[in-house]
Length: 469
Image 1 (cartoon, rainbow, N blue to C red):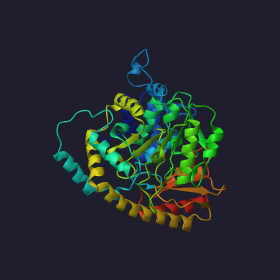
Image 2: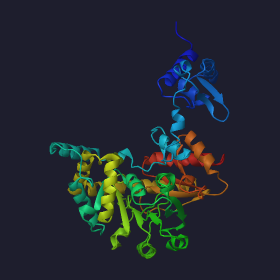
Image 3: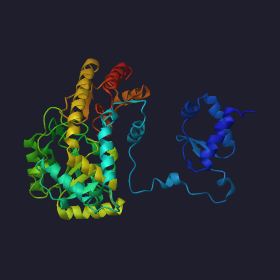
Image 4: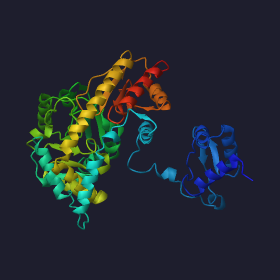
């Protein structure tokens, strides 16, 4: 005889509790979520939860929902087990804010129209070329172990040659290969910055959605922007002591898409040198220009080792390779290389060899031609859809490259409501508040990940929801 549905649900939840998936202290999914998961009425879920509560395994707590208070073993013990849900709050590294955690989870849902995702569409993945590169790397492979602390020499040589095209002349000893630009920020935060230091950054900034610097004890101070990016004079006013560093994103800024002109870049470097403010220049989008090549990096004019330069293949080629780099003074690179060895003992050897082949063979430049063409078509389609559907409610600037359009809504539109309703209707956007507390009327629209018809459809859905927001 088949067991009632509530019994099956009760048994499932009990198994999750017993095997440690939902340890003591865990909050169960809501009744609505459980009903959706098991495709039953909420009354069936309530019956299952009542049975578990009668067994002493769960308990409803005010403001917390239903929480696991015991498992089958703790019911037999006088001394309770460790509450891991309390332990996870004790770590030094801060958690992402809830909205960012929710977005990170939703970005893996392929059923959603991704107007948020800062990643190239799978349609633009050069599968045949990648297969050829991996095959060539495999064919020439010899026994290997851990790489040099600064990274594979062939890759660093390829990066050095690639950077020379951006007028950055650098030796392999001043380059570290990292697992993407995010690891670069982590190494810099724990290896070079004193606790209590101030990190100047654009307001808004991608870094505000991370906890990298704050977890290392730094204070973030946003600096106003205009259409060309961060304003040097505002940094000068805010600068109070020598314990500060500037993180900036001058080329196709995330999230605004702003492009800093060459004159502004020179002003910024001059100010930083005069005030003894080191610069972290994030340049991961510069290859993705859509109208004309951007100005040279700030680093190209750095003659005093004042700039740490971050680059990556994650945005322009593929994030799965996990290949990025830091460029800076050799002594600083020695310090960061030691920390990287302590962190992960080196980026994947296979990925490094594949990246070296991409950069040295000419395949990367060929790939960029294709990517720029398709990104430009997506950008133009997104701009046209915005003009058709949202021009009555919002305004924006046309980005000259990168992935993003920074959309500012009229004050009467509640962006928090629009974000939630859009997600419920299958469209994911990034609300501006995750990049700045002052940007509640903005959202970041990505045209990089979705197909053109999905981008247009997603923007049309936003229009249909505005009246209720």
